[in-house]
Amino acid sequence: MMKKATQLEIDERERVFQPKVAYSNPVVHVGFWFDEQAIQEDNMRVVAHKRDKCQLLVQKTRRMYRNVLKATTLALKRRFVIFGEKYQFTSCFVRDFMNRRMYLAATINEKEIDKVLHFQHGCRVTATSMQDPCVRNTFMIKGASTHRDGQQVLLGEDVLIQISESSGPPLYVQCENSTVSTFGLHLVCNLSQDPDMYCRFKFLHGDPALRNKTLGTPFSPDTTLIIQHSASGQNMALENKRLLATLFGSEIQVTCHTFRDYHKVDGHENYWKIVTRFISNNALYIKAAKGEELTPDELEQI
Image 1 (cartoon, one colour):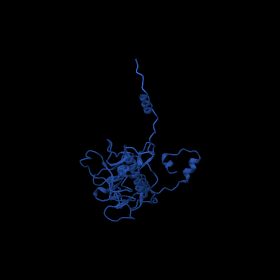
Image 2 (cartoon, rainbow, N blue to C red; image 1 turned 30 degrees about the horizontal axis):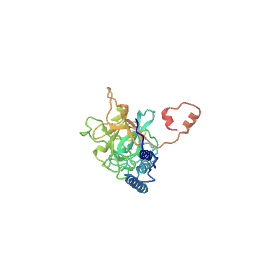
Image 3 (cartoon, helix red, strand yellow; image 1 turned 90 degrees about the horizontal axis):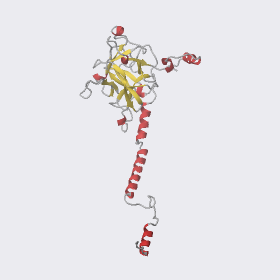
Image 4 (cartoon, rainbow, N blue to C red; image 1 turned 180 degrees about the horizontal axis):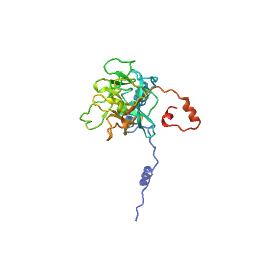
């Protein structure tokens, strides 16, 4: 037989099941809510201070892009290549998956983006499809031992390849010999502020039959070239099978490695050409307006 509940038990049950006031952060602080709100307010003050001092990561990244993507003006096309003029270096045969030309360029490591706002010692050299001349894909040829600005560059002589602009001392393309960590791998190219023996390169004619005959002679920008690293004897190569994920997108690794087939002929990865200022070709516009088919090289000139 069930026991009848007393009035005291009924009152106690009603008190337990009565709706209670829902507590929320704006109404009352319970437990660690004071600490959480204090931490949140402190973080907001830190963010505001960094924003005022232009120290936020997004602000630094935008400044870095403005510095390295600043437009440059290439040298006008002359009969011969001149020391101290601004040029681009493009691969003659290697292209990306969209059949675009690849240009020698420098990039900044994504791990250093919080500290670096411009190119500095140790930045990697890559190849980019970015065609418009800017700081990161424009270089100057400098004399290896003496000041040679304004003089003609000769085939076979040691030269320095300097990036057009940096935040401090001039930076040169460098390719160091193998170390314990890089033994057996292709030599990679970086930027260096020390123009030592590992920064010296020489231009050679792309035609093997004319290579020895043209040593010591000037050359035109349209000449197909081999860029040879003086210290290692390896040729600068653009390895399209080695892609690098950079802040500027997917780019191709640049190394110093001589590619040769069984006929001992230099591979397509080793051929380069110097690019001067583009001058619009009105004939190509007329040809395109008529509906005639244009080659990939002609499309790049429009």
